[in-house]
Image 1 (cartoon, rainbow, N blue to C red):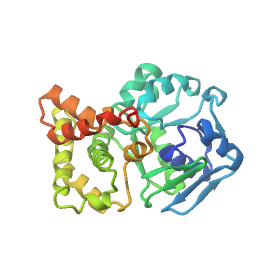
Image 2: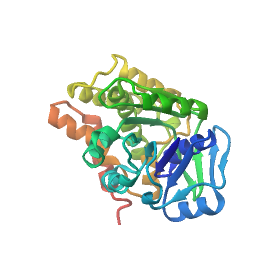
Image 3: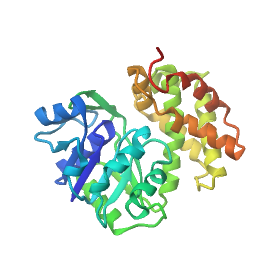
Image 4: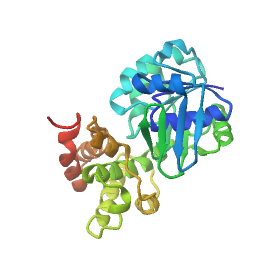
Length: 307
């Protein structure tokens, strides 16, 4: 099975390395110092699941050199969706499946006008990992899961084939027949945890036990769930409880990728997380007070550290 990983950061690097170790023909698309280090020294994944090393590793900065593939793990930042989508057109054959693994809820709908509805699936990545240094991905904890499925619902032969490979690679995977529900369940979690860990520059372990902060997690999660239901998304009755439970049991050192980006002084994905919650809330008439405050607090950092 031929796989292209677009964006070899924490998500793409970790899942791509696991799939390559399972025997898939994986090519990573990266750039800069990270690409240089991968070409010279391979790709190393370290952390809660032990160490995985790919050396040599197939890596390039030009998707056009790869040719058509079976699957694309699309792992770029949310602000790069359209430009990266246009760049991967040479990867798309008649049966190619593109699985967007961004945070947020709209990457698939943004890719369809570029790549066509047949090529685009829905996907959810659940992992805490980041680039520790060029050529090195560091994972926090051992939790590692992919959920994917066809946007119109139901299951497909290509989804079943990819599921079998994921199981062979040794991480948790689900071929979902309700991927929009899965996307929104992650969105409830990520929009909330990203905003809190970024706004406080503090890992979950120090936030979830604070009697003044912990109740706000539940309120923020409830806001996102209310927006999703108002938009017609089928969410379980205990969606908020599941989100709070995950946060309560997550590794204490876990911080959302947006928090890591903010601490580095990099651009952050706020407009597609809390910003999206606020925008949809206003559109649908759903109050989102907690996310409004978090969005306002973080907005000065959207394009990186203010001058």
